[in-house]
Image (cartoon, rainbow, N blue to C red; front, side):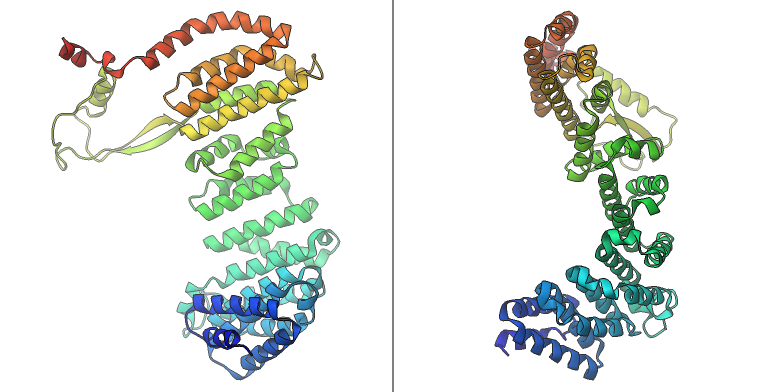
Length: 480
């Protein structure tokens, strides 16, 4: 045994779970790089220590090490030790001590993920054990013994059980459609997970349903699942929201329109508001891009309207007013715009109690509106490419009918206060001009609407370039 292996054996029994996990990972990588002889020796040593050492931290550390060794080996090399490791982990999973069975079940999940199809012969027994453990008093913080109740409350054992269920789903894969008993047991457990209020269990439940819908979609209530994802996407928990969005992404990659129709009203707006809360959310962006690629050429007019609505869509904000007596103002408010001053005077009108909550509306964040303009630009590029092959394509005719709206959207964006929006607006105007030069019908429509839009656009451009102090009478008088 090398000095590195001896050091790892010392660290995997320490009380700190992070140190134990790092030591287990290091031992697994050492076995993966050192060959089968060291792996066999190390696995036998860990098994012997589990049998002889009854200290909870040590047993949990040995369980973590076994799971890491199997996950790092993988393939045929890990198959020689699968039966031995699995038997020990299932035995430790039934241990009443929370620390021991938590890390044993976590390692069991790693073993199932790394074993793949090799684990399929153990799925039935594993599912039966997991169902018993989920209903067991020793694995539930609500009915745990007094000696371990606090530990069980802090350690998410039911969530780890749900993760093990998800691992078995991935092991079976499409075979779930033919294995009726295993599928029914899994769906029953998932139904129980949904009734839990714990956040981690809810996340693992959504992950199980996501994979179940991938492998056995015909055995799920599609409409009910979509509505559940829609409710979860509006959760205040970031983990639950992101997992729900991942589920919607997998469903919408197949048929976006079917998902939108199956959900409750407002699913599309909910996606935009999720993107507004986190503008760089790549999964939501991919959902909308896939939707555009699926239906952009068949529903062109609706996409023009959708991109326009993103620029004008508003969200409600709760504004809490402080009591003026409790927090006096330091000095007079410098408000340069008379309209803003009138609004502020109306809000702070006498007779209203301080500390009241009011709602205000504002546009979506500029990153979201910029993404909407990117979608419109991509839509025009798709239609232009289609027009090169078919002049009378339905998408081309639809875009010709809505070209006035496209021009208005582009001019509106090109005069916005955000540089990125201005650039997108000018880019779309350039695309429209280039597309018009290659299509006579589009050119005539473009010329007609360009005249009607140019006057108002010229005024907006001049206004946006005008120095802001020219709008203030106070500053104008000061100049004189």
